[in-house]
Image (spheres, helix red, strand yellow):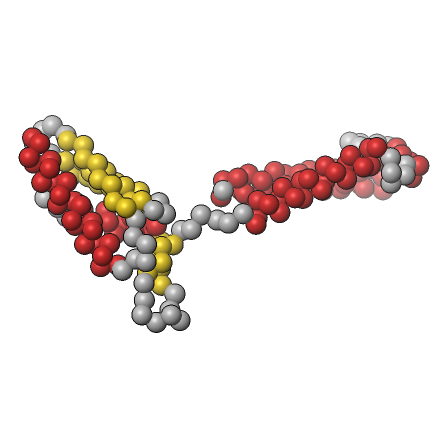
Length: 178
């Protein structure tokens, strides 16, 4: 949603800048005694002076502007994806949370300390934490023991944070040959 909002804001800003540039250009041209440069605004003014509010172009323009306004309003009122995971506290007046990026960093730091892990990547969503590690462990027994160790370490780290709704852990191991 953030990308959509940024693109919408960019388009709106470009439109406002363009309209302002056209207006400044036309005002300078009119004050200098020249004809309209970019927009035949005297013609538009004459058309607007002789057109009623009930005319089809005015109604269609009003509907288009209303739809654009509703689109902007809807885009801003849609709930954002939560970036914080709430932490359980004893005091109801306390609002404590950890960001998803902070939780990912904490889990990454915890699992990279395990012997056999050469690289780790952690992605945290609202209900899931996905841990992907690269290991040099050989064989199924080594990978099984490493998976158990990774899961236990990550689970201990999540338990230590006392999250209200801890994410479900998913561990993926990629074995790299020496």
